[in-house]
Length: 336
Image 1 (cartoon, rainbow, N blue to C red):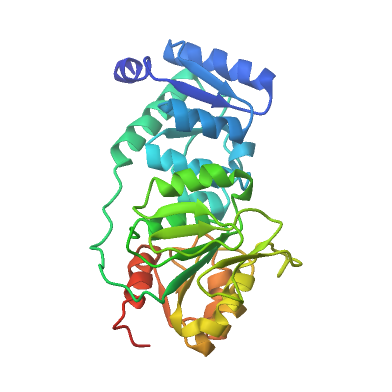
Image 2: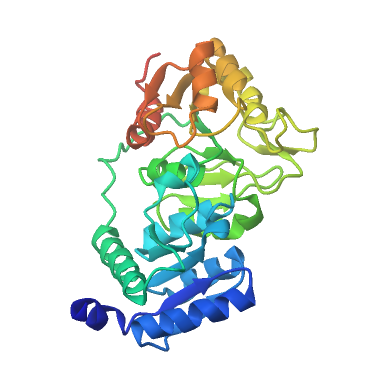
């Protein structure tokens, strides 16, 4: 306990709970446990994200209800990137599969202050030890200038994209990405991904010319991200109805590339439902190289499963292999 006391008393702690009354209670308990006044508070995931990004606390103590929100995925990935520890205040009956991609420590309110201190100590020790990212595989220097990479993802997709895009650089083919989650925080998502890849990550805009070394994310839920029907080297934002209940839709992106399928390399990552599966099938039938994420590494094996069952995938790979596989398929000597 003395070791934990010495190690945690100077930590900067972020408390996040939607109730100011609960935050006050958490603050009293945390101050008593750590004998520290270096405590920051937030009442929303948005505020917590900005505090973590700009002030980099050592640990965040988060209400379990906020951790269960879909928007937590983006914050969770930032915590992993920066090596910030995470303690969940009040353990829920069971974490959903979506949250099991993150490393948590739990504390229930009726436990002793020693237990709270131990949770913070373990969270910060683990995060500091595990914050170093593995280096991407050796880069391929030459790509077919006609190639375009298309990627679709949903639940668990933020973390999956970080593991794919870390292999991309200034020479890789232009890449279009539709992600169902994180649209409310598109600027934060772009900053996060841009800091994890040597490619340039930016928001897509209508009639924007595609450039190598650039990754374009669908901007909002008002338009579909597609390749322009007039010029396959430009982006078109289509104001059409939702597809499979989604806008932007992965199917809309994939199907827009079907007419130039031999020049398309497409990947369908973790996610719930079936969006992207039939679009991927259309791409494969027209001559594209298509890849889906495997069950073992998918947070939710929904979209990739449907695509695999339809025969839409040439390959089914673990997430760490998908980035290199997409780039290998974009080489000028690649033959399907």
